[in-house]
Length: 427
Image (cartoon, helix red, strand yellow):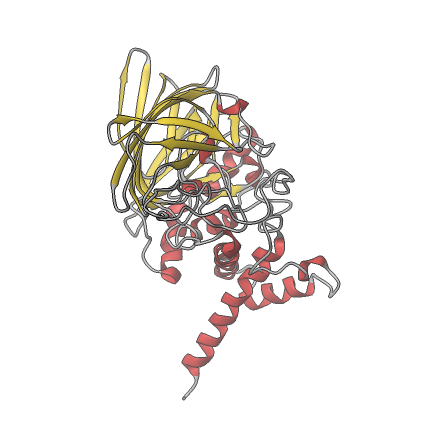
């Protein structure tokens, strides 16, 4: 992820006083004296104690949605395939919209809400460890009216909306086990009024139109973290191509980008070239398609949403910006394919992506990696706060700050230098 001013994902929202702090929620136990207990309302991440949930592992999300851009009304049915990892009397999903019905393995379940974003589900019969479960959730609501911990990450645009944020985005459009350690495949089917388009991750399988609505069917066939799932709803110009290496590329641009339209296209349309170039360093591209989209949002950041990168138009306000394209595409290897186990390890994601930008600068003749490393080092005096944040454990309030990115990439520069030295050594 890349932000043009503060390096924070959603400044100033990155510093959220309302976020949960303190100890981890009590993990669900297999049972005491034969009694089944509920799964934990958190997956066990000390940075975000109530993100994700315990007691099950998701393998697939099937989302069938309908969206009305004029009113921001979203209605849908989520079918979630999972398997229990402990005996369960109850389990949670992370979600904010209004739920009308839930079924577990075909039977109606009771449900309630708790905390900021917890949806508590009690199946008709308890679920032993190792049970495959199919959870069907019917829901509706206006995402832009929902908040948790005092913020909202559903971004309205003049002609629709965008779901793209980190570390949380899913709560506003589908129920999930919202933590990167529980990845799954996705089918996302979205009906929008004719003339509006729906963009999501993966491959567009088909479209169909009837009764004034057009349905777009997207498929992500590789495991994907929930925060990397994206949805863009609006009026787009969609381009398609194939890289020299054979990777299909799908890009989309809002039709009202104004003066930023040319620079956005001059940057994002190089996606195929950059994917092939990165493959020379990181190995074969890990997914079946690549691309990005530029909606007319007021945010400032870009985000590595899997196979379909989100770019704010502000990224291109000063002209073409291939460096941000390199950063987000490098994340497809490190951050998307290779994912976090816990949020404190964010430096690995961002360090790789920032180092890729140095490599691209060297490729473009705009400074070697060594020159750029020396420049960054010299830019921060010894008493600069740049040196006080620990990249390997920055804390949730500082995980998207500059030291995590720039100090996070130095180990990769050091490893590359040592690798060259060892290859040239007679020993």
